[in-house]
Image (cartoon, rainbow, N blue to C red):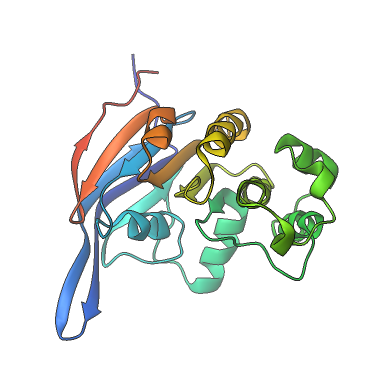
Length: 228
C-alpha cells in the first residue's frame, strides 16, 4: 500500500548561530515528516535545537541549508511578508509564553486572528470548543495558566490550519490541567492536518502518536510513522 505524502516535511535542515567568536550549530542535517492525523512530539534536553526546529517549521526563521515543504510546496526562503501571509493561512502556532495581545480581550484576540487570516469566525463557538466561552470578555492578564493555553489554542486553530505547532504547551500548568489540556488538544487539533510539539514532558510524549529524539541539533532516534 502506497504511503500518502506528508503534510509537512523537513529535509536536511542546518541552522547556525554566532555566539561571540564561535559558530554554534543549532540544527545539523535534521530531516523529519508528519502525516495527516499525526501528533509528533520532538523531545530533547535544553539546547538540543527543539525550539529552533519549531521556528523553522513555522517560517519564523530560515535555515542555512535544507528545506521545508507543506503539502509538497517549499515554504522556507520566502520574504518576511510572504512568509507571514503563508503562516497566517496554513500554520497555527501555540507558543510557550502567551502570544495573546494584552490590550485585547480573549474574544477580540480570536476575532483579530480571523481577520488576519481572511476567514469568518463564530467567536463563541471557537471559545466553546476549548472550554473558554465564559472568559470571552476577560483580559489575558486575568487568565490562569491553563486558560492562557486554551485561549492561545483557540487563536492558533482559527481558519483550520494544515499544521499546528506547539512549543511546550503544558509547561506552565499543573498535572491535572496537563491531562485536561492534552485531552482537549487531541479533540480539537487539525483532524486532516498534522501536529508537531516540542516538549520535555513525559505526558506530552505519551499523548503523541510518534516521538522524535533530538540531541545536540541532530535526530538520534525516531519512531516509525503509523501505516496509512
